[in-house]
Amino acid sequence: MAHKILVTDDEPNIVRLIQIHLERRGYLVVTASNGQEALEKIHSERPDAVILDIRMPVVDGLEVLQQSRLNPDLAQLRFIIISEPIVYEEISDGIRAGDYKYLCKPFLPGELMDMVDELFVA
Image 1: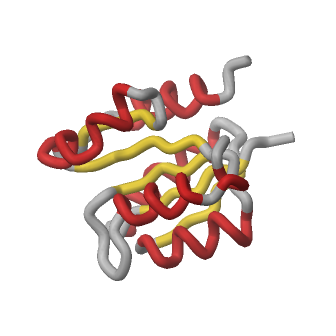
Image 2: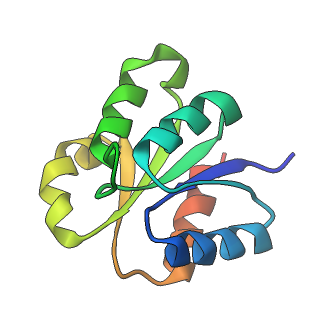
């Protein structure tokens, strides 16, 4: 059974690029264009992992992370953060704790795909 990945970014071209690469690797892909939509889809779609931009309209990615971590049902949900270098300081504690992975924009699609694959290595 293919893993389901939620891709959340307010830049449609980035979402589409990631979606194409994930689907080529056999992943099921769900998309969201802001944090509020991401929270809704986390609950309705139950993805195995979330690729999440931090700087987004409506609800930002930090709020998505916080709300997800407060829900015990989502404790095992895996996150890959893709964002600008300046954001690293805001999320560095979670990265060091191993709560999620971080990839700086701009990134190479192959780097992201390898990171996603690593999430599901037993």
